[in-house]
Amino acid sequence: MKKKINYLILLLALTFTVGCTDVEDTSSAEEPAKPQEETKVNTDEEQAEETDSEEEKANANSEDEASTTAVAEESATDDEQFQGYKLIEVDGGDLSGHRESKVVVDIGFGDREYWAFTNEHGQLVRVIADEIILQDDNSEPVLSSGRYYSDEAKVPGVESDVLDEGHVIADSLGGVSNAYNITPQDSTLNRHGDVAYMERAIRDAGGATNFEAIITYPDTETQIPSSYQYTYTLMGNEIVDTYDNANPDEVNESLGLTDSKPSSESSDSNSSNTEGDVSSVDTNGNGQVTIKEAKEAGFSMPITSDHWLYPYMDDRDNDGMVGE
Image 1 (spheres, rainbow, N blue to C red):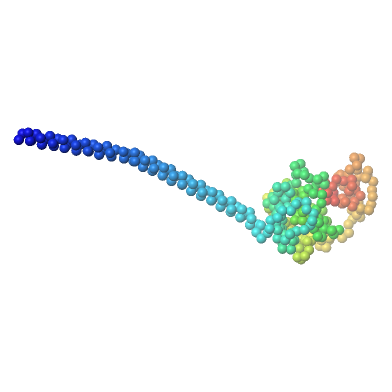
Image 2 (image 1 turned 90 degrees about the vertical axis):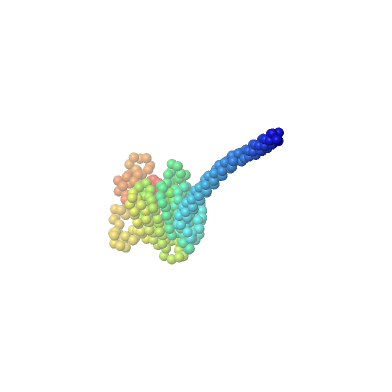
């Protein structure tokens, strides 16, 4: 009986030992799961990095879109003034005199931006410039005549004896000489009338801003304007000049603003048919007559190209007139 009990105890002990071994084996078998947990942690970090990267890309794309939108809006603003017009390029020295209809052309020499507009009849009707930049003969290819080009566009009408190839924006103010900056303009008005006065005022001020010229015509067929209106800002002051395309002396006379007959002194001293002794005017004997010398000799200004003194004087802007 005692042996039987001992046998049972031994059997139970063996059973218990085998059970513990199975538990340990099972525990050992579960340990490899730890690397899976680490792999899961790494995956979460990668996902976080990917999320951050996607957010950065989204922000970058948003910034690019905003930048593109800003550029587009700026471009649209710049193009607003050109709506309804075709932007074309024309050489500044083109003498053809032809203009296309409903176009806009840059008539500023060099990098200047002076914009000229034509209507449906090919008439030059408007010229604008944010800033008038004076000609610089030290850095620009200015001819000895003081001009950028040796001649101006032959716009229909300039063949008249009393009409000049008048610049809307003069050479001295940085304008070119093609048909989009030239109109047939009364010679007196152009050379020593309101146009000459305006150009001189802008030069003396060192330039102008907010410049606009409005040009009107008597009909849709002619290229000869009937009137001009210039608006510009000098030294902070807005100036508006309006005048007819006519001889200002005749206009003033018709309005009773001048004497109908010039004085005999003025008539005699400036007569183009009277030759004189230049030595009596050229007091320093250098062969050239200055404005001061001419005035002291009794001549009134301006001295025009048909005057006998003109060849002895310096017409710097080559407009056929000295002392205007």
